[in-house]
Image (cartoon, rainbow, N blue to C red; front, side, top):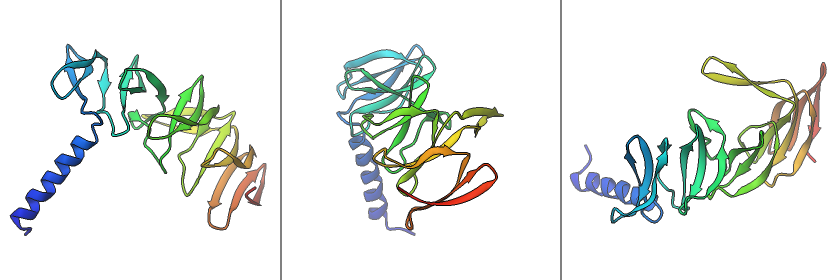
Length: 196
């Protein structure tokens, strides 16, 4: 059993961490089924207008639902980008980058909702070990409450957005980030490539 003082200290630290994560202290509130944000004193900063909301992060951005889409806003209520919908909410950060959608294409943004890799692909997978699989000509095919990617040509990019394997293969089977090898499928052939 944990000592009582230790338990209280942990609870205080968790509460303090939550307050820090709220940026300038703006907190969401609901009024007549819509969400907005108030400051610590209760003054309305962003009037209720969103279908759902998440709290502002320590980076001064929040994700809200506007017109049935998750978007990222700043503290002045400026829409910065539309997030890729993942697991019924905005995409998660993976290696400090998350996916966004713009004009039907996908790219990556950082934790400040700054677009760091342009939206130029029909689909992008999250970064893993410094690389992300991308495709063009592919489509999301609904299967129940989830979807899967079908068709198209695939390539691989690094965290700077540089293509290390061009978008020209039927699939990417495996990636060895340490040895910088990629196994791809082209037609019926499986090919092992060195990353560029």
